[in-house]
Image (cartoon, rainbow, N blue to C red; front, side):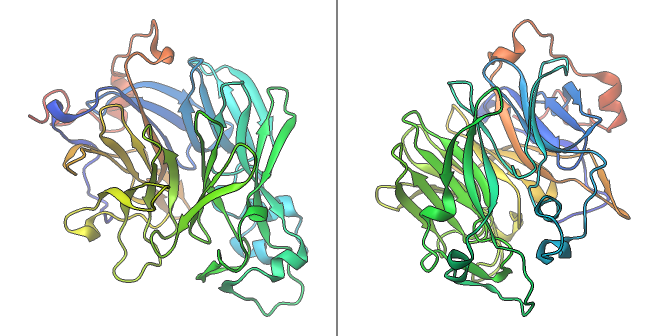
Length: 393
């Protein structure tokens, strides 16, 4: 989807008989707020994070909001600093996409009840049933291992910092790392090369994690276009990726044991376009796919995600354009909302959303809450237009 300074914002369409009813959570990327929206695309609750630069947030089973972000006011070098060996690792990581400084858990009213500081965590998180939390964490690779990694655009500089790989760490409520899984230690430097159009700052760049009921870890790596499953015993059970998906995000488990992937489609052969694919890890067969018609009308080169809803529909976040929409299994778009929350960046504004989630009305966070449109906040952002309250069929 392209960008227009005069595009509509908020709800642009809703076929009521076909949607999964609930509340949608969005956190504009690099903003300072999280918003809960009703099915009319109106704000019914707002969390303000004045000391943070947001990554994204999700509601968790205890009813609180868990988020990942960086601290406002942190010094951030320019992106070229990522390849400068004279700059400390913590500063170099701040130049990379998905960087975060902390995770924070807050109540409905915004009170902080838990916080975890770690300058190497990034992109994603999972709160486990045991109360621990999992994160991707950047790590510097061993030089010998780095030299064996194929692909990427090589630099002629002699003084280069170590290439970054990824671990996935499990952190207890008191901040102790109780488990560590080396993603770059499981992948093959030759069979899982960096995309030839990418640099060699990072090999893997994990941008999504998920865990199933048996404890198997599902991960997505952007730079080498790989999705994988790590068994409960720590072994690599399955990988999938290029040339079938390219620079994908948000690989998630489905109830039937399949894996759903937001295939960004960046650097693919042919015209760029994105898709949502459901892959059977037993056969590698694509059992369902969403493509726009025409295909080029759905594309986000980075960030983005897709969430399977309880009725079988899929909530899609086309992150680069700030578009969130719901499709049926027949690939019919039945709900669409465009982000009105602009974030100033240099001399322009952006509407990026890393990921969106929808929650059923019986989610624990909503118990005893009156979820009514916040009139002044909706008016401030131009929400409540011609579709609100009466859209669709």
